[in-house]
Image (cartoon, rainbow, N blue to C red):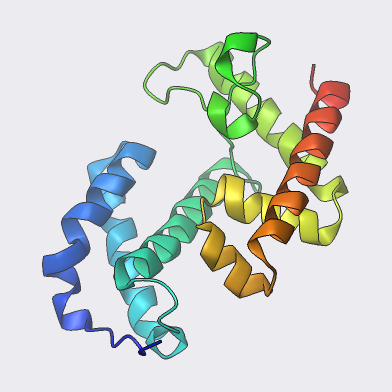
Length: 183
């Protein structure tokens, strides 16, 4: 596999619009979105030597950006560093089986939704903490951070079939934990 060479001189031209559009849908504030994209480029420059070329340059920058967005929410939502997880898990069977299929619409928020989402975020974090370490790591990477299967497998040195077994077990345990502790 040829080693990818990254060119930070092209990042603004190639990726800034994509990264900004990705960010603005998650933070809904133009200035914060610009800051997060800028922070992403700075972090990318600092960690260029760690780029392995296992993913495209854009995918690598997106993974950095996702961490920046999570850090942003951790910072504004809690002194303990807990991220607000904006998910709605209703009892409507037509919506699907897994948490990632039940993400709340960020543009349709009421005060009650915000309180419920904060409580659910804490419940998810609590349940995540009860999982075995590998299951928690895989669940967070796949479901919360939206890492690609190949990237997770490469980072954790596991096969794709092993990943899907781990993620299935984690989802089943998370659903049971949330059923017991949230509903």
